[in-house]
Image 1 (cartoon, rainbow over the protein chains, first blue to last red):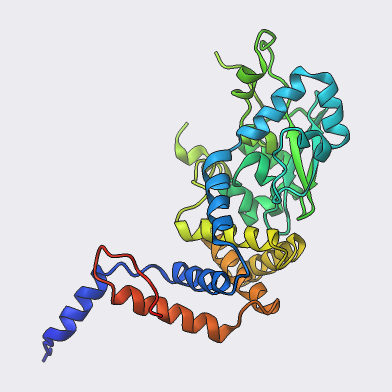
Image 2 (image 1 turned 90 degrees about the vertical axis):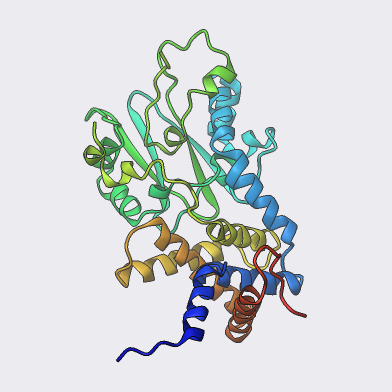
Length: 211
Length: 114
């Protein structure tokens, strides 16, 4: 015989319809509220980070740096020699990027970036990292078989092209300077920046001029 | 080209960076704590790397959800190692939030009782 307990039904119903956040969301709230209360972290800094990195930056800053490198040989030389110093003039130097090394793709060298340990990434230039960048599959395979992984991203490279895989750390982040697409001679830096994709600056995309 | 032709990695290309707000909150909180000098970027990276490895060894699926779960585990662990908080305080505070949510009428801001 099944029992019918009206109060129990009401409780279950109330629970299903309550706005109780998920377990991880509650854990984050617990941790954050404790740290804020003790003055260990500034809630405004947390909000500012979310506004900036999750919503505003995207890969736009990196694209701007790449377009500048394509159009200004002196800047490009500086960027490749000392990335950290070169991007200082853009005032992008977020605490999330650490030391920056720019690596240039050429007809004979293709660069690709990974963080084998966790997911270190030049946030201040590229915004948040894509989901696949955080995947164990990418972190393991791009080191072992970069050519195959790149092919899966549509980057088919001839055997003559050397692939260099750069492993990021918390102190050292990489920016790939992709090759400037053919047929873009008449474009200014702003139009060029619009052609630069996030993946091209990680190394998993080759750029084309837009038709 | 159908979605089936895409490799699993490439197919994930269009995923949003965060599936839920708490995921952004975890990363933002970690970044803010690094900026305040409560621990270093290297310590955060090592803690996150260790947690990701642990999840992988435990057979967790290779998904973004697993990644952020690891980030939360790592941040809780590191905060305790750095004596910023402890397990009891975390558990009590979480229970207090559950209590607050369950006793706040719909549509009103949820606040902890003082």
